[in-house]
Amino acid sequence: MSAPRKMTLLPLIAAIYFLVAGGPFGLEDIVSKSGYTGAILILLITPVIWAVPTALMVSELSSALPDQGGYYVWVKRGMGSFWGFQEAWLSLAGSVFDVAIYPTLFVSYLGHLAPWMTAGPRGALLAIALVAAAAAWNLMGAKSVGDSSLAMGIVLLAPFAVLTVYGFLHRGAPAGAAIPLHNVDLLGGISVALWNYMGWDYASTVANEVDRPQRTYPLAMAGAVALVAVTYVLPIAAVAMTGLDANRWSTGGWADVAKAVIPGAGAGQAMAVLLTIGGILGAWGTLNAQTMQYSRLPAVMADDGLLPRIFSRRRAASGAPWVAILACAAAWMLCLQLSFVKLIVLDVLLTGLSLLLEFAALVALRIREPELPRPYRIPGGLAGAVGVGLLPAALLVLAALRNEAEPVGPINALELGAILVVAGVPAYWCANRLRLFRGQAT
Image 1 (cartoon, rainbow, N blue to C red):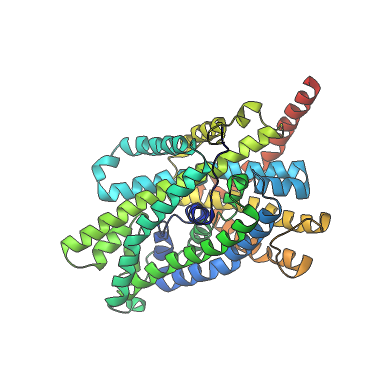
Image 2: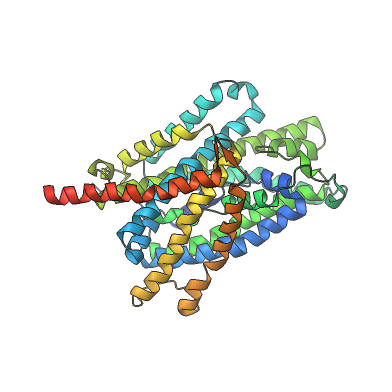
């Protein structure tokens, strides 16, 4: 049997785009919390101090260590087994909230198009079905996910290109003259922006399923950063030119924005339908790509003896870790009822901490293995490796401050996040006992 076919540059860019963005969907809350000017500034500044440093770190480490498991492998090699496990723990714990965001967005956008389809229990059932469908698609392997991401990316961005051109050609009242914001929340807007620019390291977990990863990853990172920034800023700037009140934006509300901006029931409704279809595709494509990247972690941890061996089983035809995919999908289905903002703040906290461990691994590997071949290297020597992580760390402090104000049951999001972080220590002890038991058994 021939080896599974691998992802090339354009499908990898598309997969990274869906892992990070999945289109401009989810930006609506930034506009409603920060206004047009604030939203555009946040979306322009955030990639400079968050996305670009992360992309540089991922480019160096993925070109130096292009192994399945990606960021888990980097941290384990640079800082040891305990911290490698914490990296995987934080990522998988964060995935419970991260992955649940996309079925939530899917149901929200579908509800704008056909409310009867998401009424009552139908919305929850659709969310569960979407997770199951992503798991089934992923059984065909990473290349299948990358190819489908490329096709869906073209389809979902087309209506935004039309809306952007229309907005710039049909200027209305200045956006600054709009009604003042009803619910100003700059930290909330920053938290949403962090989430919208998060995920540059995700594609590293399938490095052994990418063609020529040492060369392909740095190029894919550069292309994806530019694509995400452009497709985020231009549509919002175009709508701002029309003078639409920023208070009219809401989660899943691109369709309503299109109907408000484009005159005529027919044209506005048609664009709303196209944007809603794009939102549905964006949520599906991102969920599909997230399933791909997260499911590789349990498989590689099982290879290391930190999880039961059954998680390492892979399909011969595609190389997909089918047990890990199904187990992750089952876990994600348990967290589909939290609100959009609660899911985001918990995801940013947990995934952000895992990202800081990756920056630490970058520095540790520079110190411990200075001779490790690095086809791409962040300039500036050790100081450059240290400095690239400082601004992302500062943004995470701001996100943590916002988390303290978000209730989740009887506690706030920061407290729940702290409990999940601390739980990684006894989880490692249990996993290490399993590994020692296996060693004794063999």
